[in-house]
Amino acid sequence: MLTFEMILEAREALAGVARVTPLHPVPKFGKDVYIKAENLQLTGAFKLRGAYNKIRSLSPEEAARGVIACSAGNHAQGIALSAAKLGIRSVICMPAGAPISKVEATKGYGAEVVLVPGVYDDAAREAERLCHAEGYTFAHPFNDPLVIAGQGTIGLEILEQLPEVEQVVVPIGGGGLIGGIALAVKEKKPSCRVIGVQAEGAASMYRSLQMGRPKTLTSVRTIADGIAVKRPGDRTFALCREFVDEVVTVSEDEIASAILALMEEQKTVAEGAGAASVAACMFGRTPVDGRKTVCVVSGGNVDVTTLSRVITKGLSKAGRLVELTTKVTDKPGSLWHMLQVVADSGANIISINHNREDKETEVSACVVTMVLETRDQNHVDSLRRELSARGYLTRN
Image 1 (cartoon, rainbow, N blue to C red):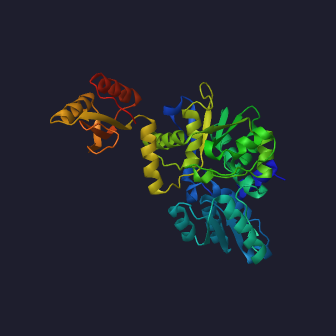
Image 2: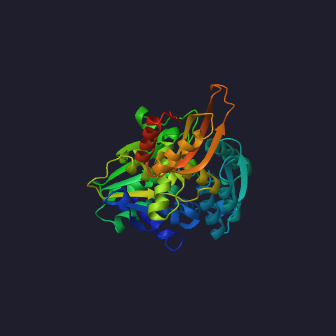
Image 3: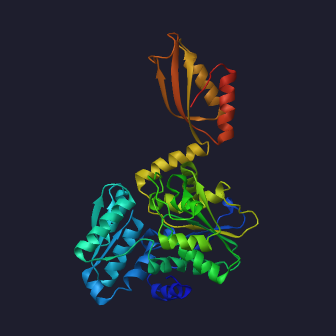
């Protein structure tokens, strides 16, 4: 059973091991909004806290047999580094689709990596099988009291860094992070609201709280791989039901926009899971006006290729990148006149395709598809109206 005293003990154990991460104001997202930058933690995510607290608690016999864990990446790196610091063998089962950067980083910290087809829950089953077969100690990424206690130290730091905090917004995957933070915050300051955030395509805790019991989703789909969990833990579900005030969801486009905003406004890189809390505030999923709000940016371990796609999605969501398709008459000068409208609007052409062979287009016309760099959604709407007024009907 998790207690507040266990979180206090974890803080003592983590002194000199985990960083006390900074708390930064982010005026762009609201006058009283801050981010707790766990993306600047060792290994690039909060997971080191719970991982080290678990492994340092192993008996000599357990340590001699080694530790096994399952993870999409961040818990893996936390376990690998913690085990290496304590001289303990670690084996990590990871989903085969985990970002390459996270797989390689985990190996770099000294762990043996086993790639398992499927998602996190499939890796979890393989880790449990190996645990029983080889005698390892299983370090669950979120449903373990010692792991949750380690994550709860973030709540203590927030209260010390911003005693007047009124609301803490936390990403949820399996629930270990928010479970620990919520217990710590409610113990010290019961009036402070704790809000959880999940991706719409991986809303297992959100659905479970609606049903009144842990629910297993048939599938999960989100760019926020760190919170792509089909079923929350029994312990974390109980903690959320008791201490969390509300759980909300955000879309993929909103997560992408939050990643982009953090890069541009804060010069900080967040992975999808880490940016989910910011997305909830940016898009009004949780009110921030008049409330001193802390968004926990849980990690920054985003794969470069994923980041490229996320930036493109974020630009599109913000109306700064748009694809338009229209028709022009197939005769000299027609394309030039249409492009002049685009140029006069101030849009920048990234790419263009001029197709005479579209099967659904009359012989006398061509289909033109353009990718444009624009200022915002108002700019896009204005350009559409101008093109339409000149006879160029557009579609996405």
